[in-house]
Image (cartoon, rainbow, N blue to C red; front, side):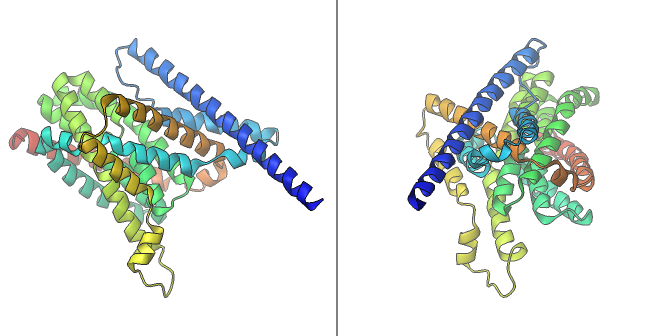
Length: 359
């Protein structure tokens, strides 16, 4: 009887995983269709890049399904198939194929220099301000990385490095996308009003706006030259995803998460080190060496979007509004204050490097 009971239990668990996985797949396909539809609608209005990025659509859809499932007491039934961390890590490894170091260096050192200045300064400013506002260390790390590096992707990497809560990623990602959309429209208008040269304007967009789609959108609104420079700046900042995540992992292992009496040796660092970063770096090396064809990169990029769509849908599916509301307004104030600081600093650094130095 015990063997029969165990077999039945495994069968029920298998059915739950299978049906839950089918549900996730269905909604990922729906998210892809919605993303394509939104992009097509915006294209008719001469907006070439969709600023309403699919992670936000995925989270909102996941939250809606979450509410429905809980209302009919079916949420626990599909829970075994909700593999948020697995989907996030797959997406981050595949993201490494977008970082081709040779391509970056061939497009100019001005972008690299600006990226170093911006990422370093904005990260420590946000980290300091979040500390003053009593934001917890893990959300503090996620927000500082998102604002200083490249938005949603950087937030995910930082969250994995410091073992942050899913609510921290959702909260920060929402702020990134909501803030990026108005900046995409306002910054080109301000650049024209201030009479900025196209390369300075592009560097300003790329060094400040936190999502790639909104960066390209702002550059497209301004000029072709601004678009090209903005893309280089965003690529340069993307390189720092792995670097910042690695440093955060080490810092949290030896200081923040260190247990009383624990010696912060290499073994401890390795045990807590997010292993997905090795895959991220390996993927970047492959593309930097030219070992992947254009067709292969296009396919990997599609898989990357599917993995992140599944991850963000699952985040919405697991999201607790009560947990999110407990974060309060302090993180919002920190994020927007850091964005203002980032905007002003990026303008000055862009003018210095691309305007005065002519790099």
